Image (cartoon, rainbow, N blue to C red):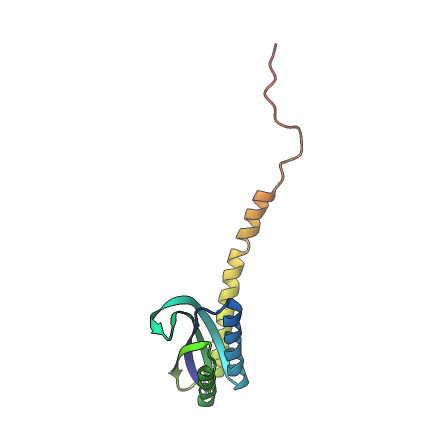
Length: 148
């Protein structure tokens, strides 16, 4: 297996659901070709450097995966067929991939993401608890009594 990185630009005028469907389609192709998907980064909608067809904006997506040359061939064949993809580029990152090291890298990324989510999670409930805490029950505060 080899390690690859592919960047595709999906038509920028498509709704978010259609973009997600395109991303799902291509990640499933990698899995169907017995590839290992390391990660998918969505860079979002951006202005293109130059007009492609009648399009000025595109949704950029980068996928990092390990697979065979046949995986890349099938992936790029589907990029050419799908009208939602306006540009793509696949680069080889490494000739040989150690699957155990790849699994360890994926586990480390998952742990880092879980730690980041866990670090943010306690801060939110504390803030909500402080805002939502009711006033202590008891006598309302009043002006001090006058001696008279």
